[in-house]
Image (cartoon, rainbow, N blue to C red):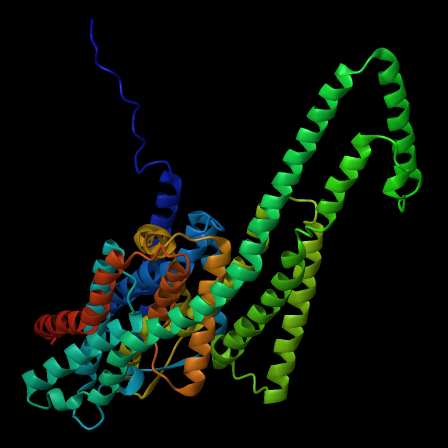
Length: 532
């Protein structure tokens, strides 16, 4: 007799087979359509360069989705607020909307002024090779970091790629070298490795400490009191049941009549005097109910959570106005911006206050989870829109610069960004999030510390506040590094930060720029050899 156990047949591509196939078709379809559109848009005969540019550009967008977008939604998935597929849907709507609606019609071709190309005689085709190599260097490094689960800065990656490619070109052609690099700007990037996580961690620590003290701990204590009251009621019933069974038949009739009178008194007169009650059962029950009235279990949810949501909505709306929608040039004055933020804050306060009231009869821990889940989805969605409108430039900027060179045959300080290009990059983000984003989501959502919707909301709101504050003051920061610092700040409050995992992440931050630069340097040598 055979003892072999027949294993169930494994489904090709696993349980999410249809999702994988759908996103695979979407990725391939986007690539083909983008190539078809670009051939007509540029009118170039350099098919090889054009197709290589599109492949590398969409590959960069793909990896931004797997690392940066995954980093943004890690806290929501880790806290159980959103499933991976729900996060994907939210990201698809808000990231692509941010890119297409508010991504801007024009982008800088040389980002951040890191490399000074204007003082050096760079040929248009060599300039295109620098941008292509930068995209390749950044994308490959992001892919490595993403597979390892390390959240890194896409901005630092693309800057590293540009530096490596430009310096290598200068050395090879004899037109320049390391003097092309604005080392002061590189110093600011190095400073952000320290400043960003410290600021994010500090703000998150203060915010979550307050949330934990005034809301979560209060709710835990109230919940414990409610459980004790429930146990006291059960013990009270059991005690009087046994006492009733020991009475004689005549005593039971008399006691039943007394309880009936007490029940009638309580129902007919809400302001009854406990001295008017005849039975020990209802007198003791009155004491238990009086204790229950003093618990006021939902006080923190009714008072503090709406105020917190209103304050958070003001921070998030300011981030959208000043960063997410800046490319639309709405031309609102200071008073207009303040009024918009005030209206958003008031509307959110009313909505959350009413929502908290409807949860009055629900379990306290479930009510807390639901309220903070709603608030966390709100902050994550706004973050995604702002990210789509801003950081998509890391892929689109160099991408558009190459297309502009192929179309015009010259180098422009600014390049037009067609809507088709922005949409293609937005789709690339979402596909990258689905295929390779899980490792970074796991790191941010559960690896560095355990997440709850309240702590996830605190981390996202803290990161948004620091990004806004730093950009207004002019402090060089990285939104990726800030969010990781905020997550660690949560871990410090809970005394559960995973410093062992943080060590390789910090090392990855430091080597991001040189790693992307090295790949970019090799890339431009290969591109000039193949197409030059």
